[in-house]
Length: 125
Image 1 (cartoon, rainbow, N blue to C red):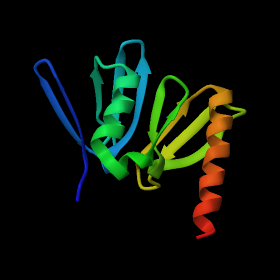
Image 2: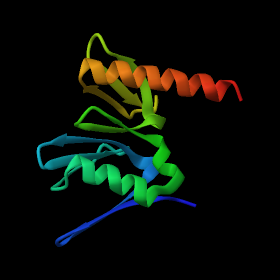
Image 3: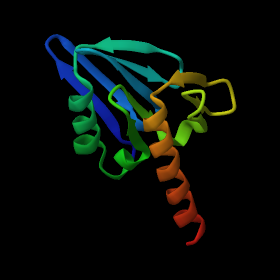
């Protein structure tokens, strides 16, 4: 069953398949939603509200998303690399979808440790 993130605010209605949502970045009260087809949409919803929407609407598919710091939510299925020294995270599908994003060093270091633990646990199954 396909899961969708639905944003309905004012006159807008946006429906995004969870597996096509690459990342969401924030700037104040605005958030930019970026999808696999390189489409970008600005919404006037704060990051915390979007994080809650992902949790409430996507069920288990919401587990694929991770918040990094205050201004970034990524789809872990697109995670390609993390370099906390460069404050950089790369999201890619290795077929044309490629994004280099900046994030705070501390947030990336914590996220890297979390991902390593998750990967270790999944390999141990």
